[in-house]
Image (cartoon, rainbow over the protein chains, first blue to last red):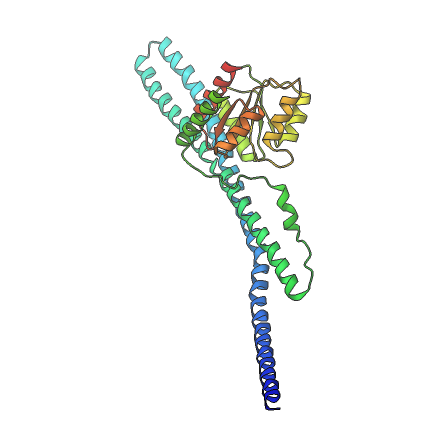
Amino acid sequence: MDTDKKRKVNFQQELHGLREAVTEMLARFHQIQSPIRESQEKMPVASKRLRKINDQTEAAATRVLDVAEAITDREKSLLDQLKMVKEEAEKSGLHSLAEKITVCQDLAEQNHDEIFAIIEAIQFQDITSQQMSSTVDLLLDIESRMDVLLEMMDGKKRSVANDKQEKQKVAYDPNAEFSTAKTGQEDIDSLVDTIKRKT
Amino acid sequence: MSDLKILAVDDSPTMRRIIINTLKRAGYEDVTEAADGKDALAKMQVDKFNFVITDWNMPNMDGLTFVNALRADPQTKSVPVLMITTRSVKDDIVEALKAGVNNYIVKPFTPDTIKQKINEVLANA
């Protein structure tokens, strides 16, 4: 009898302990739901901000290109005019003047070269755009996984956001990097030569 | 002045402008743009281009699919192709050369590089 009673008491104690553990587990479960939900809600905001940065850097790069192209066109016209003026000066025997015009031509050529250096440098925009698109896709992935987790927790089905469908529209290289043009290309040339020799 | 008629393919409008400016500086004036492989194939049906410069990562049709399509068409299979891309790993380069790309430039590039590569491709064509 005593043994049965003892067994019953132990069993009740175990059940009680189990119930407490489950209650605590549920409480903690509800506790983590809230931060997950908050993080999940912040994801679209983060993606939107990155896209905005992308759009704005593209707009800035376009503006720089507009100005750079206008300057290069003007410099080209200036060089053409200087060439004509120099020819006139030399024809007229004004050699001292012709020398000064040569100095102006050199300066204009330098300007022309440096404007092109600016145009080349704008390539950063394409590379950073790819890096940001890669990050946005990563955020969209995390958001989707959080949707699944929250659905499992609260049973509420989450609709697919438009942002997630846009994932397919942007192509990018997730490993895009802005390295110095010369070093990167030398390595590539070496690889291409090696591959071509093997085939 | 070069007699090359070039098709420049890149999904980034900024990049297309840079390529066109760089080609003009290198002496190539006749350049047409396309925004992706699909757009490029459509333009190649309408006009005769004797040189193609293409990016790799593009929506609708990427550069590799585009090059494969060029090589599969008897009308365009011999058109020289230069790929300009951020992809720089060996496997990518192997894949591009296998698809029929004649040479490869990694971004960022300089006018000297583009001119040198165009000359190399034409010399070997």
